Image 1: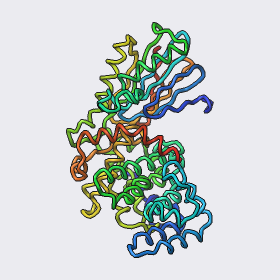
Image 2: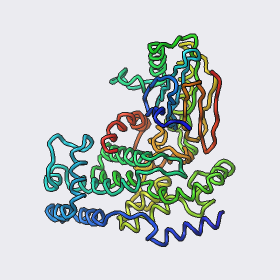
Image 3: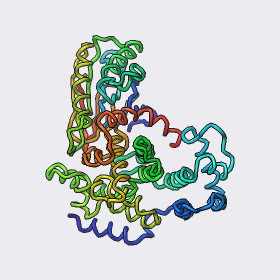
Image 4: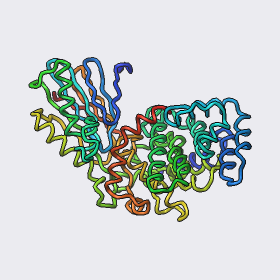
Length: 286
Length: 166
């Protein structure tokens, strides 16, 4: 293990100032929407205080990806037409973009690659939830899918320094890339991502997705289904070359996740086969 | 230095052709990149296929670019339309990786292998020789296919290989 790197990562994740921030309004909206008794008007008022956020939300609502046909001209209308949960998803999408839409050097991803993968995994996760008649978690797996890789943004710098050691551990010790990250640096991108979500005060289920999306059986039981959905969506995207970086396919596809979500082989292949169309759809959000 | 404006990015299930000095670039997981080059005319093309054949009965024929058995004839047809001669064409193929650990016997785990198999068959049917093959394993691959001389650069797990045969 590279103790110097380990110590540097430790300093970064224990000193929250060094982790990327997102505007407070996002956390506020997310918590408001999680309250089942919240009034639409109260959420709309909160969003409307932020002019830039308002403009951005309307733009995304009217994009080919989200548009339901009618032009949306106000936040109230957006909430009524799309629902609170979808508007909340859009808020997270807007604040996550500047964090994720950049080159991730250590993982060998060009600018836009990580963002595109986030969008693809989000959309595919939502599709799996709908397919399995779990509409009530569609918004959670969408957001979780969008940000599942967020720890890479911070860890990339260190991966760049020790990539050779990580890949050697993968090849010589038959480790997954995550295991090798921990072996060489003391931390993996899941742990770093979880710390970022701590800083952003995101709810536990999203932290579980970020922490366990490559290892869904270790997730707390109450989050396991949501985590498994994102796990499957992510693997399918990687196989299709979406979001593939220097970590390649050095990951594990977990069969109990497939079982717990209840997808058969035909359904898995169909999801994989739908990736080209899905990519066309998400281009509207890039 | 490569001039960035010469790079043509090819997405999943896309077929593109071009000529010198273009560089066709794509990123592969279990998919296959089929690079075909006319060594005399110096034009070439790349197909990024997702699956071996179209198993769906309802929408069959809708997306020929997705499947090895339909995308490869399509690529050759486009190259010939662009002025290539079939007898000067040769292929290099890359991709077809599988998940590192796949603790299930689901067929999704075999897609990489099946893609390689069908790609070879489809090229064989048209009679285009495969000169180089960089397939399998668990690494993602970044392909740069240089149409000035038909060389193929494959970057995988931090290492670069260049295949020159045309």
